[in-house]
Image (cartoon, rainbow, N blue to C red):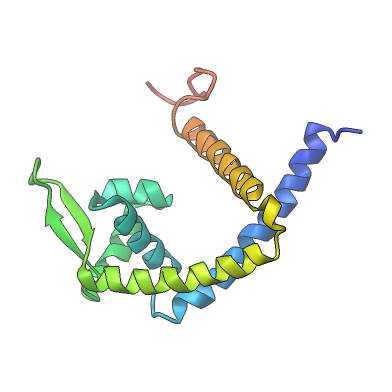
Length: 165
């Protein structure tokens, strides 16, 4: 018998919360060994993946307030892991870019974390691994679409109540 959407939602809630908690606490231990906070690590990871970004772009990508993002970047700049540079198209805009030192550090951290992911995947049957990754990717997309809906217009084209524009 198929589960109701409500029952599936409740199961997803519990599984997802446990997964996120387990990941965050494991992740925090790994990253702190390198002297970075989780936010600093995510910032360097975003910069290495996507290149220089404005403070607003970084904050949006990491789901942080700009004031929090500014503090994180200040710390990375102080440690010479990142630098602020003027935008080529608009000198009023400050972009953040990863430094060579930051690139070396995040590469080392990622290598260590990938070893952990390999260990996790070894516990998933090899014939299921791609399906698990695809399902998680679909779940991420669904969460991201809900986030967009919450911040401006819902997926069905309706403007959010209480939002101007």
